[in-house]
Image (cartoon, rainbow, N blue to C red; front, top):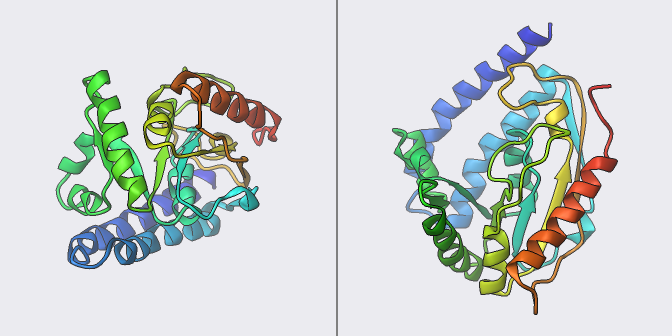
Length: 238
């Protein structure tokens, strides 16, 4: 049944993507905030559909920690779930993603209309420069900048070095950071078709200030909070 329910979820996700991808092009003349609201109806549908098909729900803790002014969000990356959930929490937002995604016909074009920070992962130095330059522009425009500091999805219980891009952006922009931890990887594992039923916990941490700190110190503080918090969350596979 888990396989059947998971396949049903993907059918709905594919159909909704086919419908919404061209919409991303049609709404391009509208303001960014209006485009963002319309396109994230796809996100809202998929989270609802995930609950209906796979009985995967989530709870958010620490909403009171979100400041009024947009800043940098650095989040644990375990699955595709957090890329959806964060869109409905930090509004409006942009993501740091691979430039190759923008080349996908229709889907990539619609994605480009959401002003992502599309980096060239073939050059580490160039990608960091893109994050800092374009990130400062997005922050000045009042947009939340979402960064997954590990750079890729990491399975629960495993650890990968935190990259300095987010810390470098914080130093240059003087923006603060919101750390986010969760345990989504237990129910929506990376590279897995199966979605296990349960309730994901997503925790929004207190603001980490960037004033008078180096990029390394900021990254270390973010990593310490996220990893400590993740280790305290329930192991949903048990």
